[in-house]
Length: 151
Image (cartoon, rainbow, N blue to C red):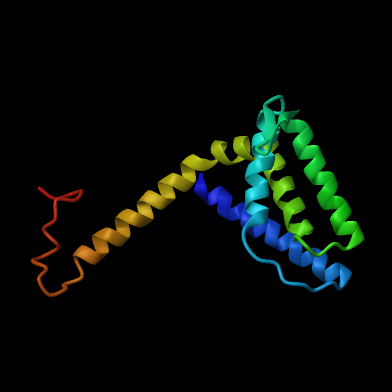
């Protein structure tokens, strides 16, 4: 599942660069805030009724669904008004990826995972078998390790 965090970062960065290219506003963006926003949006979408609060204002509470709406509204305003403090396009890209993953992506990816897992295991096994039979110094006829196919 950590690979999805990587994809969230890639998607949010791509959205950021597309917006920068479309608007002509080229400014640096640092960090993985789009990926963090994707995780936050996924959690807020999965459990929108969860109560959240601000650590320094414990008397203020709100739902996760409302927090996500507020963050998306702030980032949309920041993108439209040209605020440069944060990479608002990356945040929105990450939020869209997080919501998409909860709504559609999880079912889509997990339904199709078995052929990919089999392909991965076949590739791993063929590579590891090939490296044992490579005739490296110290190899005695195929590795002699206790791996699959050895007795």
